[in-house]
Image: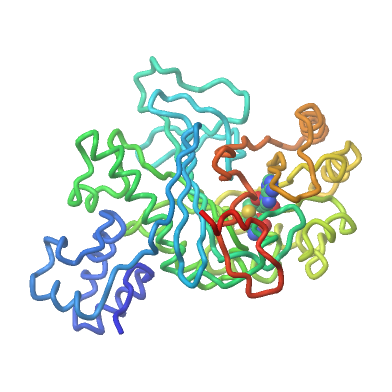
Length: 428
Ligand code: SAH
């Protein structure tokens, strides 16, 4: 059997190379060809000897899942449906923000901060809260501001059954392998590079090996990754961590820990493990200020109640690359969006360094909840702001292609017990 090199992090790649009697630098070389250049053919690896290329072709492969569908929304959001076999498909979404003119359009997934963050190139990359004016106008001579966030899936389906989530509705099939997780970033980087950069005259395979993910002008096609697609990433711990190591590795995607965000419904022991193993930015799906309500919306709360979750967040912050936790709170009209809940939420988080990201509910067929009206969302946000918290409203993106938060359903053969919530996906 051949080894799929796509899923090997640096350590595993070194072990593979050692097994072939090769020196450790080969691991770096292979990682760069695969992840910087997006190469899936050993023959294209021009600085590897022909003899070694032939041996590699016999003992290894670079295999990503097939793309079943590739759709772009009116706002530029792009969604890929990947075939992960045995009737399962998973989704990943690319959310461009700002644009080549340097204007930011406000926060989407994982974006909460009105903060300034020095990037590798030394340019200041402001992250804007909704409604703030752009920090740089198009006439500025400074490098242009661009952000691209890729939202990726960690499981085929999800076992957590959050009451408002479409992935949860279709049941759980299996954990994704490391290569299936990283291949979402691999495909997206490749697709974005080939469309934009190659058209603009840069981005040859060799230059991509030398300059990871660059489109020119110091810009990256994908500057941020959020584990906010299908599935609960902490329920697939080892594969998710191996994939995140590749995201962070300079020989692969070279993202900073601050720019990789893992979102969890609150698996307390795994939050502690993550803090020790691979601390990245953490988002926690809170959605309710009391156990009574959270038990209903996020059933895993019955196992790990709010008090334990808050304590885990406090422990996490000690090691986190961002010194706060981002609490996600989906606003469901008449359910959790009243002033009383906002006050209870403010009281609950007052001792945890945090920011709050309010998510307007994204409806899907057969769901009893409704999105809160914009005035209700604003009122909720104001209560939090008056209590001294930083609260932003997540901008809904890509809803014309069902790419908005909580709408990712892919297509999963439910091995649990439920029926598919979106049978139309199967007939397409
Ligand atoms: N299992 C992880 C990742 C889930 S998706 C988690 O629970 O955090 C990322 C976010 O989208 C979560 O906060 C999730 O609660 C939210 N979400 C799910 N369904 C939604 C919907 N229909 N509308 C808006 N947000 C939703």
